[in-house]
Image: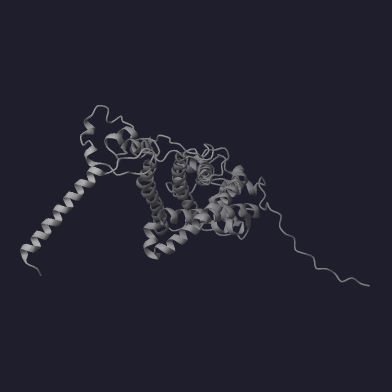
Length: 389
């Protein structure tokens, strides 16, 4: 190691050389060349540090700002943030927002006043995800509580052994087609929306990514199938879901929960009719229509980002509500009521079940207004006789 005085002199010489070179570089730095692209070097002595105090500073264009503060592109980005449309060579009919990088300010229900992309994000993350998930969990817990507290609804009348056809093979096929498509949509939708909270930590990022990719494609294919089957279900069961006698009394007694015994009803009680009109027709129509918008299969519609954001929010709300309703329907049609699943599985119910749970419908059958057997039963084949020659 050298003498300390020599080392000190070397350090001072290096520092002076660096300062001298930086000063020469600053004085000789080239200015922004006319017609050149990109950010050019600038002479620091030509930049005006107090330019913001000049009159009209805030209203300067990007070119005017570059004269006093090279590299300060705040006016351009302010226009981008305000949603000003720039130039784009893409046709307006195919890319209506090609010239807009950031959407203009809006205020969706549940969001603050901000650009539309951030407003949609706030609605999704602050409302749709937490409250939608909470609703589904509450419904599941409520149904579980009812099942373990009261058990399934049983038929108190003794079975007669005589069967009544409740659903024809066509009605059951329409129902099961719609139910299978709905389950595919519900499971895939729940995992896509909520899977990162309960499934991602368990199976890992790679497997979760492949799973959600597959479920996204399943969701897109099951959607049109659900729409077609929903129309078939609506047309098939429409005639038995109009308001009839006894419906108001059933509602006032809460379906028997307030009176101890379910009041007489027709083929479908008011609870089933509420699911039919509120779920199948109203919410089902909204969910299908918004899903078609997100799939971009509605002809003549301009698919801007705002359109897709609104469709997504409407789809999310309607999907969660219809899932909550169909959870209650699935519960009562399976483990919540003895004999209900057999009616949809095999098509027939015992006369005692029909009399206790749908007395008006049973009375119409006994009076001959409705046939007990509505479908054509297959006749047993007659064994062929040998031909005598």
